[in-house]
Length: 99
Image (tube, rainbow, N blue to C red):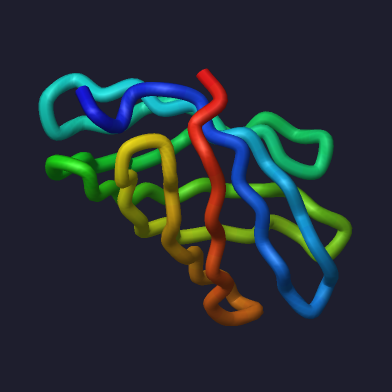
């Protein structure tokens, strides 16, 4: 599907710039994969795909405790953009397909 692939994304938040690698695999409307960020590989949970749009959650362990992130975005050709919500607010991201 159009979403399948590997994407390098970047975010800019109050904590600074963060880069990550998203790996997407779809099976119908189900999105699976991972997010490699800050030295951790996080599993995509509750992933859903609808055409070029996607959403999923992930959980990360940090020094501040376990945090949950809610991602929503879309792919347009080799470009990806969207945002994620956490207890620290909403943060936009964008990037490109690398594989």
